[in-house]
Image 1: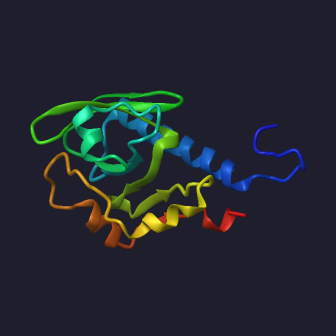
Image 2 (image 1 turned 120 degrees about the vertical axis):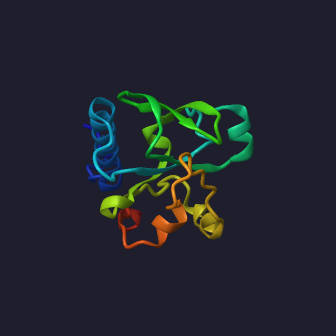
Length: 165
């Protein structure tokens, strides 16, 4: 059974991650089929070093650890799969295709409704040292709101720290 260890402990952290990634997949699938409704838009921060992430070399060179992208006014070719999603975003008038596996996502925020998910790295307890580092952000549509603005808002972020051992 998935989510249970040999000692029959329930692994709530991994079960929650799986459920949260399923929620992201459902939201993105709806957007792929029907477009972004109303003022909804997403800030998605992901690990650019994840082995299954696909992005242009110049982007991975510029953002070697993590990167935040915005899906709002312009995106194209959104293709949602079971393990991740592909989308083309505009980086300063240069459309670039990306593939982002769900397990590479660190945060998923929709500031229009003050909703956010944060995935804690369950494998690396030392990652907390990096929390003071600024998160590189790319606003692909030149909107006035930035990921920093969203971080300062009252968005409800679900954190899994309480499930860590």
